[in-house]
Image (cartoon, rainbow, N blue to C red; front, side, top):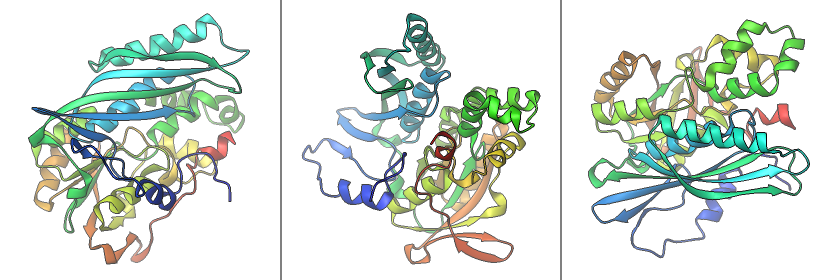
Length: 336
């Protein structure tokens, strides 16, 4: 059996990761499904490290690389500090202007969030038809502020910020504009959708910081490939809990719905950087939600943490169904 493009199936990845044990006692959080970064004891603080590639987007690829990696640092309660990039460029089509545009995109995005570009590697690579940027972000957090998804417990509430498919909206508007125009999507809507990279934006640093300053956060997770449904499954797996999700509380913008409907993509399975999933005690849900909303960021309670035996369920029109699973990110249908 061959795998489609995108993340490996969670069962396969979990089995592979479970073969290995951490041999360094300074590793506090190692490789596991559902945690966004690794955590290493560095004396007075924890070093938090993450690596993630950008493979779908080409326009402003450097900005995607910075924010996607910084998001995973933020979900651990940490502050992103240092970034290294491996830039793989396509043969035959790479020129100085392409390389300069990627470096400019990386530099501007890093400056905006106070991250230092401190190293990496750049090459023209045989067999590529588009640029790929593989980022590594390093951050730090005080030991009493670390957030781990294993702390999620039954009775906790699940919050969602910004909505489904923000990153997918930006990618489709940039990479598939001609196809969307041919389907009758207006230029004005496409222009708004193309700005989703900046507004509402794919960074979750602000809401992660607000949540951590407002309450004791039990878990945070950044839904990337596979969308919110996959992120919820990952979160439940690492915490060994069930989830009851209220379908009516899941939300997406009109632009996101229009572009995903044009390509028959399920909103729950499209790449969704820019959204943040937050798990915390029931008593903290409203204060955190209100604090995030007060900062001008949309936020809603979408579900409850259950015992593992409950499974992963979604409630809609008085009926319970299994939370959908996706073999690959829905946006992959458009690029295959």
